[in-house]
Length: 79
Ligand SMILES: Cc1cc2nc3c(=O)[nH]c(=O)nc-3n(C[C@H](O)[C@H](O)[C@H](O)COP(=O)(O)OP(=O)(O)OC[C@H]3O[C@@H](n4cnc5c(N)ncnc54)[C@H](O)[C@@H]3O)c2cc1C
Image 1 (cartoon, rainbow, N blue to C red):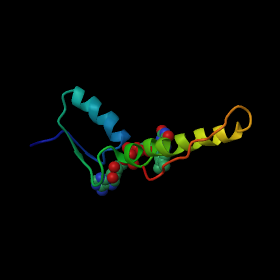
Image 2: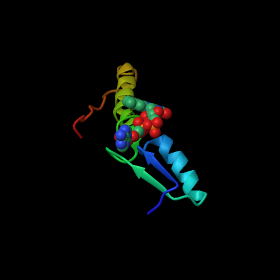
Image 3: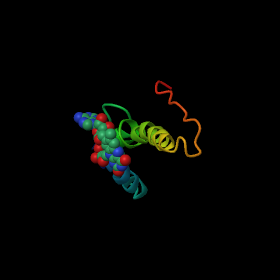
Image 4: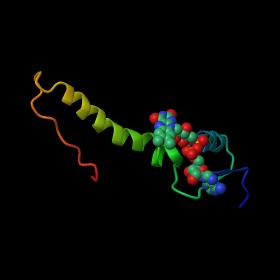
């Protein structure tokens, strides 16, 4: 198989370029040494949002305890 472009890594940078090239009719290959999707999808943005979101929420609720908020949920971090 011949390729017009071979990307090393499958993060956001590759994604945007590879999709555009594929839509333009080019043969594209991607070589990934770890998880497909790169840092943002697997270790960065999404992971941060999943960890940070519940923390921010419970921290805000704690500030309102005694002002109408009676209980603050605990976070099951392993889950
Ligand atoms: C904790 C954290 C939180 C973040 N939060 C945000 C956010 O909220 N919003 C935001 O916009 N950005 C965020 N970022 C930044 C975002 O993750 C990066 O800007 C983005 O992932 C960069 O994309 P990229 O394609 O350049 O590189 P990457 O996504 O890092 O992809 C590079 C890929 O190349 C692979 N690779 C490297 N060397 C080789 C090799 N020799 N052979 C094969 N594969 C190889 C790697 O395994 C990896 O999958 C965050 C980053 C981190 C660490």
